[in-house]
Length: 195
Image (cartoon, rainbow, N blue to C red; front, top):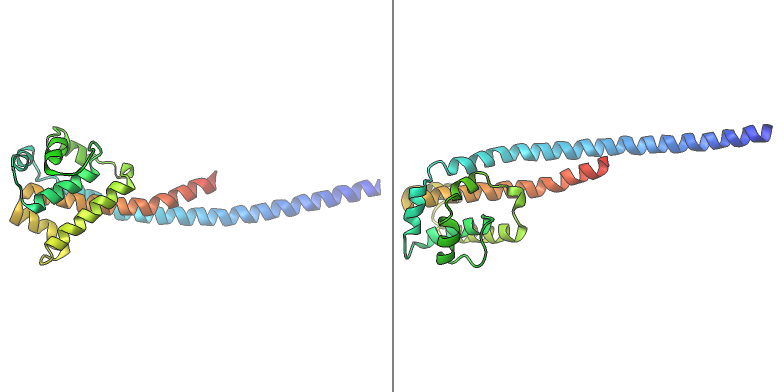
């Protein structure tokens, strides 16, 4: 009987030690989860101004202004480049962003402005975002005399209002994409650790 009690006591001690270790592990995990969730929330807060800027950029873009751009047979390079960035980001496009396909797939879409306003940055493909960023860099390089932070307003005022609005939408949307790309792994890690 004493042997039986001793064995049971040893077994209970092992179980208590395992339980204490598991509790310690879970306590540490809780701290990591809370940290990841907090970092994700902070990053998402940073995205709010970018989302608002993207929507505001479209406030002065009208269907008539887009039709005016679409009517151009040989538009200035900046218009083609900005519309190319929209082509890369807009989910309904396929092929190469040459002017005829931009006109047909982007500018002819009757719901383009609604689609841009309701754009879901989480569905942006990495390859498309990289192509869009590369084209944005080309625009900045082509207009190197204009400070980068003033480029959208310059295009809006000096080139074409609709193109300027689309440029500012693209700029803000790509910023949201970058923030989301940073946040998504943190959210995933927190969800995985909770499971």
